[in-house]
Image (cartoon, rainbow, N blue to C red; front, side, top):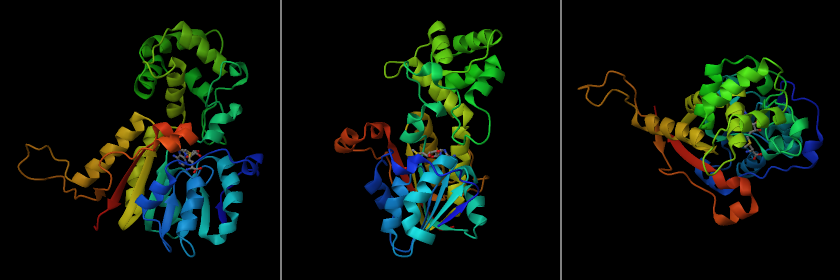
Length: 329
Ligand SMILES: C[S@@+](CC[C@H](N)C(=O)[O-])C[C@H]1O[C@@H](n2cnc3c(N)ncnc32)[C@H](O)[C@@H]1O
């Protein structure tokens, strides 16, 4: 198996895989995973989907697995070692999917899977700062980077972003009521002392009296908004979808699992627009954009896990899977 770029030290994570993959049978089916296919898992995580796809494509299929997180790659390298050269792991964002494959001499593939967001293992490791818990908040750093080897942490962003930018993130990525009040409270507080731990942020969320609707604790949405901003998750998804489309062979499939409405909306619109092709205003008498349809939607509505899967894996409850097929150029 090839593992490109420094995937970091081997970790104890690989001995105790705690991430359960979601909608595995549905992904195999919708991707059309069969012997000999070349597939990409753009969000390798702990290789639950990848392992299943490698079994389905045996004996000669190839799987390219990408992840931004060196820890996830190191754990997956051990898990996928039995597949030898059939699994190629790459430390890269899926927004660079096309270039990452090109560097390996691959121009076209039969399927791309994106299982968005963070893994349970990332969530459960307090030092990554993805999840807050009242009992450990004092010790939880405001990091939230998927690739902890580079880029700005949540604490860095909270220290430097303008009040307007913070308001925009909380409003757009967290859909919070009271976004402007929270941004103002943060900017006033950081003049006295930096925000460094989850406890600091939870305290300000309370002080600013933000609201999060009926389904979520307001601090959950504040954390969600910051995580999306730290990792530019929606920007990466937009570019990643276009990159994936550009490497799909005719008849190749794109499958995306989203876990919240912001992501799912983006995927839905991308697939719908690619199916439609032309983006000229309907009142225009002739098409001037020249765009041809490039995808056919395989799922009109998102596929969701059944009650049994949700009972076994509560994280699956918010999963929304959409699939589309590349049309011949
Ligand atoms: C939900 S987990 C995937 C779990 C995986 N399907 C499995 O079976 O173990 C999402 C993974 O995608 C990675 N990730 C998120 N955004 C990414 C991006 N833009 N490029 C590459 N990896 C990304 C995260 O680091 C995380 O490991």
